[in-house]
Image 1 (cartoon, rainbow, N blue to C red):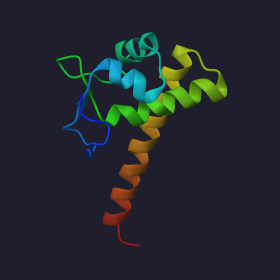
Image 2 (image 1 turned 90 degrees about the vertical axis):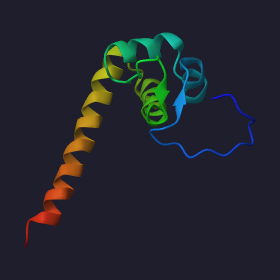
Image 3 (image 1 turned 90 degrees about the horizontal axis):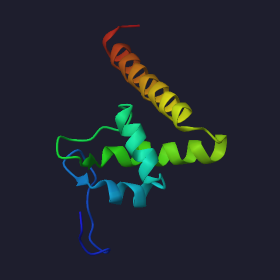
Length: 101
C-alpha cells in the first residue's frame, strides 16, 4: 500500500498490507510477525498479504510483549484467548437481543 503519507484510507477487510508494512505499523519484528502467522494468530491471504484488521491485533501483540515481557508462545496464546473472548462477548450480545426478558 505505497501511497503518499497524506492519503486517507478506510481500513477494512478490503485493504491489504505487505509484511514489511505490518512490521512498520505494529512494532512487531519480522520474525515475530512470521511466527504469529505460522501459529495462525495473524492471518495472511493466499498472496502473503495481511488485511488491515491484522494491524489492531499486531499492535495489541506488541503492547503485550512490551508490558508483560511475553515470549512468542505467550503472545500467541494470549492473542488467541483474547480473540475467543471477543467472539463469545459478541455472541452473548446477539443472544441478549433475541431472548426476551
